[in-house]
Length: 122
Image (cartoon, rainbow, N blue to C red; front, side, top):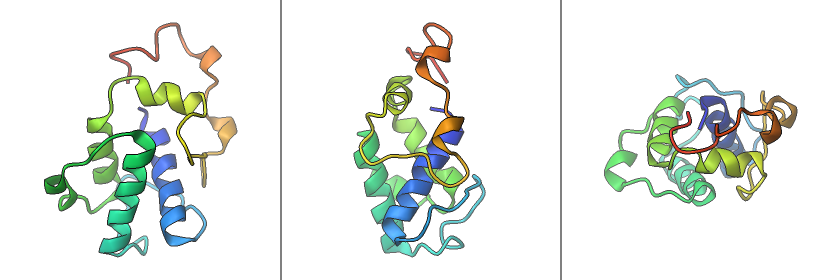
């Protein structure tokens, strides 16, 4: 799953958890600098797990301090290609591009090279 899509998903999760507009994110942004306390961070991880149908092991939760670390943990749990196809089809519940990534910035599935959503895709 491309980094931009994960950042957009995490931004939507932050908006959901905090009740504030989705922030523009960079991988080096610290969660506490974005105003998330430890409980909100757990809520964010649970929200992302539900939408991506993944489970982050408890021992990895203590290592998540930045957006990049959260994105890396989530990306490592994703089967190649599955979620990218779901995102492009609008099938990940509750996810909408937010902040600096409007829906128009995501490629249409038809414009992707054949086989790019299969196993081994970035």
